[in-house]
Image (tube, rainbow, N blue to C red; front, side, top):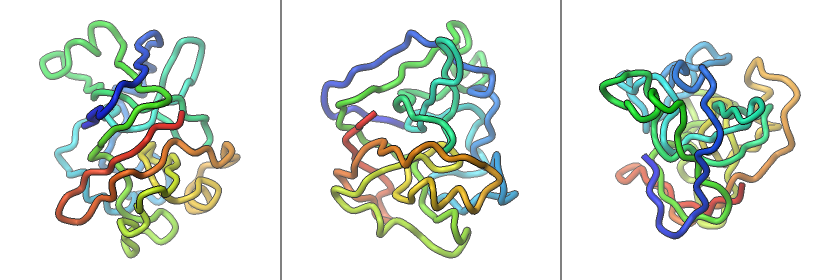
Length: 184
């Protein structure tokens, strides 16, 4: 889920890569085999990019899910679930809106545990107003630097530690909503 709290530039020019409909959100696409526990996801979370996850340009006029090896290009505005009955617009048009620079938003999709020591360290306390947000190996917002988290995965050659946004509202365990100002 991604809510806009202010005017934001939304682009729907680029088409979605096949991976946008295939990515498995609950299990890790990279090592460790099962990613850190994420309090915002369940086993029932559908495949496909989720609204609030980070988009990256992966080809000419082609968007895909972001990871630390790619430069982020915005946040997906809605889910791209590969089910004609659930998300017909994305399936029919092969497009989903992507929020670009300058928006103030809220999302319930972000990392809640660290990739460096999975399953043991909650990072909710790191989401303080003003904290920088980056792309995690699973394509979600995190406060952990990509150059640090990438060492815990099979990914190589991180893009620069690109700031995706900054925290405006800190999530807590009883209200897992993250407020942010978008910077990409």
